[in-house]
Image (cartoon, rainbow, N blue to C red; front, side, top):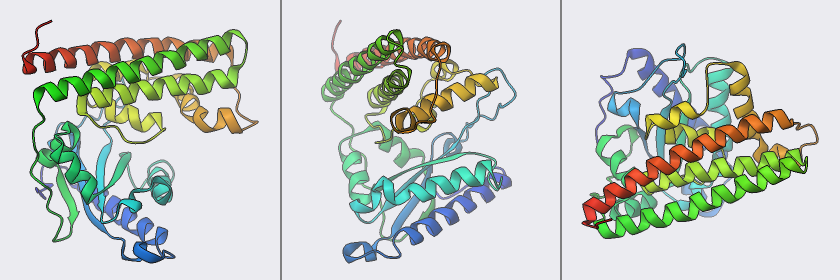
Length: 307
């Protein structure tokens, strides 16, 4: 796997060095009291993927879209149990803190965690997401015994059937949650409405990620899912305005609804705010439908399916 970062500015190379250090520190703290197999837990590889690995990252915070490419990292561990999200909660918080508070990092960073077996199984199944990482990724750290398997392209008909099933399942689920949210707004059940709207957005992002890449992380953080989806098609970027504070604040309020709308007595959201979010969800649904339909049409052509 490639290891050369010379295409990145020195400041970004330093930032990535800090991120690797933070991940190792937080992982060590998380397993310091481990018992049994977890005592032998190790990070095998940390891979930079996405726009910063390819060299086509975007840094336009002052434009109308206000888009800035995050760092995307895949952490590969030697045990499947070590991919548990709870184990990495402090690492996620650390990266947010180092970006927003200490300012050690100027570029936000997201990471996913999988075992070596999970990654190699995904490559054997021809999942585009992991095939792209194997092709374009840059190893920021790797131990000696972590070679990835050679990707195995999917059978075109199987790929088409999977994409169609993903779209039918997830898009339908998203629209159901959206309708439940709208009904809750009409009944003035504003907090349940916010939760349902969150679920609609989460499902739409899972939908487009699965159809386009055959992979989606098991996350409820719609900001993270948005960051992955936006990299796949520029039409998704414009759905959520980033050029004014109110729009950014409302997206954050929707992100927080997954937990706070259900459990926090301090969470408040108005009918006007929900109306704005509903308009954005409709826009997102339209773009997701279009992007997924185009991908399915492409897969049909590849599989030789007419109509």
